[in-house]
Structures are given as C-alpha cells and as structure tokens.
Length: 106
Image (cartoon, rainbow, N blue to C red; front, side):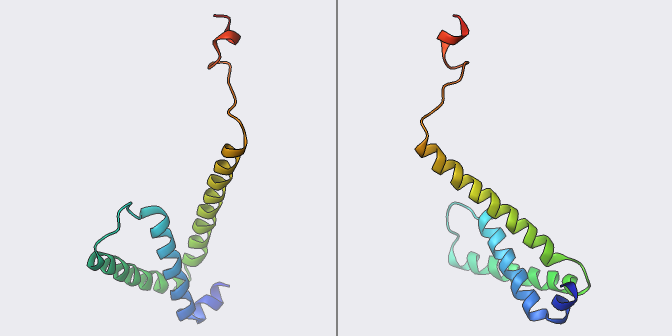
C-alpha cells in the first residue's frame, strides 16, 4: 500500500488533506466560527502543511496510515459518546450506596 501511495501523489495529497481537515474540525475547531478571511487562511495553511506531509509520505513515512488510525480512534470515541447518550436517555438513573444514606447505616 505504501508503494502504491508513493506512486500516486495526488491521491496521497487528497487523503492527507481530507484527514487533516477532519481532525482539525473534530478536535481543534473553536465553538465560534472564525471570520471568513481567517477561515480561508487556516485552510490555506492546512493545504500547505498537507503538501509537506505528502512529501514525507512519498519518502516512505506512513503518514496516511497514522492519520487513518487517528481518525478511526476519533470515530470510535464519537460512537461511544453517542452510545452513552442513547443509553442515558433509555435507562433510569442508578442509585449508588454512597448516594443512598439508608444503605450506609446512618
């Protein structure tokens, strides 16, 4: 796979840029939207950084594979958050011994 990605730099660049944009939006995105010029500047810098990462990918470093693992882990976390939210709505709250004074003997 590494050899194929090295022979197809455009595909490598698009994958790296896509992973970079997803990771940025999932992890580093501020709650408020940036002004449009700053937003354009951020994406231009990501495009430039993706070009540098593509060069490292072509030089046989597993950049795409590492970013894919990071994205898979982020998707697993998001799935777990959605599952916990779904389970929290359907299940009644569970009382623990520390919250119930009658069970502790006081």
